[in-house]
Length: 386
Image 1 (tube, rainbow, N blue to C red):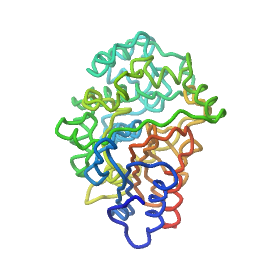
Image 2 (image 1 turned 60 degrees about the vertical axis):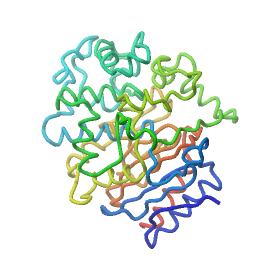
Image 3 (image 1 turned 30 degrees about the horizontal axis):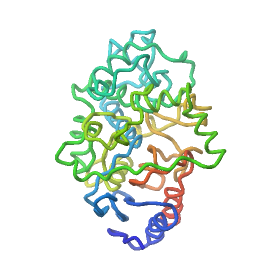
Image 4 (image 1 turned 45 degrees about the vertical axis):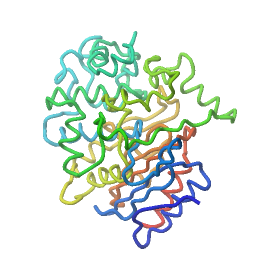
């Protein structure tokens, strides 16, 4: 039986039970879960093994790469600039980033960019991975790229490019790369273990990702091919047209080179406690720090997309970079918002319940919709806070 360590306040035992069940029934190897209610941590637990090679325990010092859960942090950076009056969601991106007007994009707005409507899910002839990790070459390629579809109100998930687009917008306005901006304005004030661009000093704390087995169910295989099969927009978006292909050395997202770069859509490294604390600070004060007021939160987290996602095939709902409660990301209620990541990690907030939620893990799920691990945790917390 997996030993669970950490804080579980009275009345939240069902959440700890659901977390333990993830190891016994749903294949978790190492994981963390944290829940804040009204600005205070009520559950903050870890369990399992961080590194199967060494047997290192998955504890409160462990860090985890969280893939697209990172996008919530990038969206928060944009929301902070909006609240300060420095970023107008309705303004053309080219107002802040003049080079972006190339390729017929002069009228595309910040809102279209942040809600996955600008048609830049990849670039023609993407730079090799080493140049992508240097950041400037991929940013320049995106600025020059014509949209891959006519901007017509439809949307398609910018799985990797979202981060460099949002990151360059933050840099043009603030003068800082998004990793530094995030540290100064979010992670630092809240005391988070959360980086977009991991310092080498923190590398030994990272739990390697464990890949999920390929799906065996014919329906799951069919869905996977529809989303990311050869020639699909989803396949292009998720691999940057092959720049993030399979390596002989294993998962490229387990490498120091990827951890050190800034991929603000996909390489955030953090823990469950920091995710929950960050999101809690968007619905109220956490130790005196509140990162979004009510007006900003409503503007940034109200869904502006509808219909089928050009890349993910299913319907997805996005606000200004935040995912909204829907079938592909079932949260705790209609006003909840956040972001999930490949394999199962998720962070979100629900202003109606006053909560911030964080779940991270090293064993990736192959489920494309409805991970039972987060489903069980979410249902348990709803029973506890009802």
